[in-house]
Length: 291
Image (cartoon, rainbow, N blue to C red; front, top):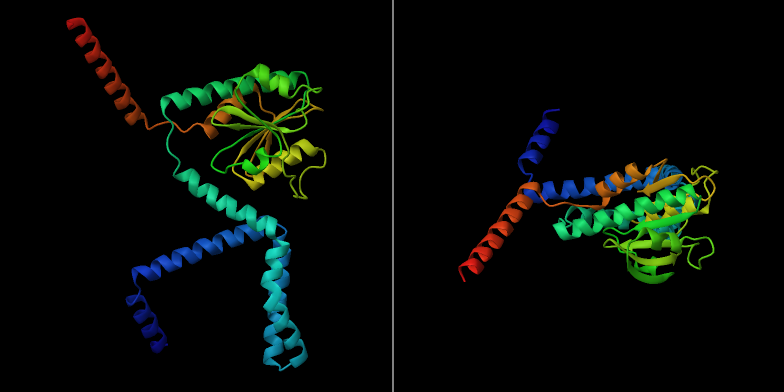
């Protein structure tokens, strides 16, 4: 016991900054690995792998040569097979990690950009209310840190100012682009008629159709916010991070989108900036009056 305590003491005394960083990185990787397994069908696979590892250990201890040979060769190619089988899930996880990192360092919006986004959200909320009342199906994707170039290429680039009338025309049931999704970038309608990846989550309620499944799938594969208007019920829903929230009114939708899409400047910084701008304008006015 004393030897063990001495070993622990020596180990703790010899810990360096690099060791701490190493532990933090490993903890981070283990956390995301556990989260990945917990939220996906890989959970059952993990149980199977643990059982196979147990059998490999037993076969090695008991000198079961045939079983040990088979399992050893199986694990030698198993990692490559796992990457191939779970390629979509692994890609989703990596995109999520990268998206969260980019979102945390995203630059705050200036007043002009905030005004553009605020007007866009107001027009979208009004259009969603109108589409809901007429039970016209709609699918709108708001791009954030994860760029959606692959999805945009499946549709038609519009690059137009966001207005409720244009949104209504895009999703009019006889319009050529109404079946696809509209992609919003930087507060503008960037593309329409785009095809979204369908969610493979087996726990999605069966009552939800392809439009909702596509919206959830898009939110699973990126950090985008997806707005869905049901063609059958007129219910307004929003998908974010694979979670679908339903029953939005125009006001609640507007508030939700503003909280998710608009990153305002620090209040103190904004006040100082406005104050400096007003002082500069005042000085210019005084100079003009003197002249």
